Image 1: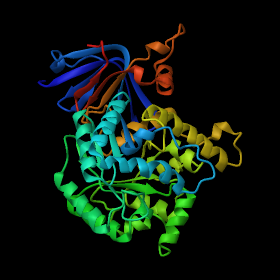
Image 2: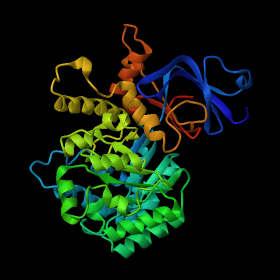
Image 3: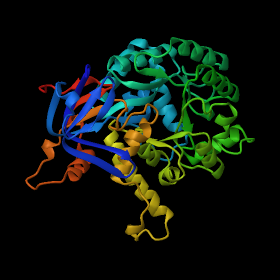
Image 4: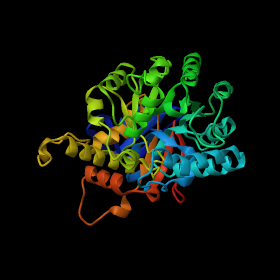
Length: 435
């Protein structure tokens, strides 16, 4: 099997929601850029392929961050404790001033390089990232991420109203710059994604123009939806003819079966929005940390999943304070418990809780969000995106089951525990001192 290799270790993934597949002392075989399979013993055809023996270390699918603002990485961890502020306070004080700095392309090069380096030392292999309104800076981000081996989508942000100094474009400018950017096409594994920031910062004319571009170029779309109650009220003020928030995107042709659509947050869906999310095959990017920070509420993730609505996870840096998707897995579980507690009449009945399980949340971070690329699992034919993690610094004298070790790794690990990372079958990171 020319071009094939195997990674040997404790293989763990979620082929289905709420259930880990864990195989100790097993081989994960890559053929080309795809998973060939997981084997307890190498098949005869694979006997001579190179094998990277990782001992008892875990080999997991790479995580998929479906919502991250790369341009907000520089102020990550700040601005999450603004009290008694209006909706625009966080944007005016942090987001807009920082994003305007990316018009300095030397600054963009440095900051986006720092972002990519930090992301490399997390379990994330694929992402849907927001850049800024600056087309050239957006292209810089795409080149840097591709240079570090990442795959995914990057969006040039569109804003033709209600934004900070240095970021505002006219409707014509934002559409023309978007077309010029789309004409440049993909950079390595990084593809363009049309990115109206959200309805309050985009006129109906701009959204309609972006809808036409999405259809013409068959380009995916990402934006924000129903993140906060004050945001929703603002949307109603801007266009009283809307029956619900998501209708602004639907009217513009941005919710289309010909291209994927990712909507971040979706914390307060109306029945009409719930129906459109399902019928338009929208993928919800659940961002538990930033949702609890900004609105103090958790999205109805279990309801979405039970209705057949696709859900993945997002860090939402800088609304969130970490790029590490394992933290987001933990927070998604916690947020589901919080939501259950305030929506049930009997929170003391723990046995009846409808909450995310550990494998369920892991599924969202891997195969759930990975549906965009057919990745996030080790089933044959999936993109070979894998991360090797070392849990030896947590080992205690008592023996632990593989599940217990994995739970502790997801809950407690950080960049020190990342040993190696593969994207599309290529090794993009190997810890110093390893093979």
